[in-house]
Length: 202
Image (cartoon, rainbow, N blue to C red; front, top):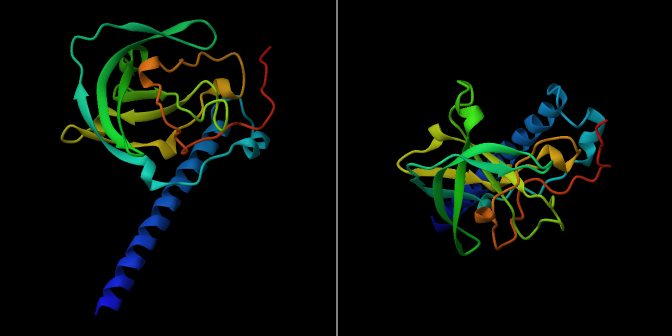
């Protein structure tokens, strides 16, 4: 009986791991396809071979406590081209990752908040100790949806962390991750360094 139970658990865990890896694989295929569909994209189909990712790892998918922030003033988040974009701090999120207790800040874009299609979009830019080594030096982003917050919690999946367009080309207004989202650990999940030649817009 113990052997049967063990086998069942082994198969169940293996099945979960495979299905999660398949889920991330599908997410990344969709991510690549979006570059081809987007007229503003810095990459063409031939460039996609230069995109690289860490292997999917469910340890980097965490459940975070959400603490909504009130009466936050709009501030200007700097971008890599020297301009800025208007955001406000939407919430703090608290969770554990790799044995460390972490707090980050979720942001909401003022421009997107006025667009019915993106009114629930939340922005999680961050930097970590892989930057300039295994990942883009300017940090990475995660997109979230306010509707995903349930019982004051939200799932954060660092396997879905992606590079800003500025990692591939100049000429884009990519927000610089605020210092409060500088993580003192290596997040070995999500997108890695782009290995193609950086493009220059005329």
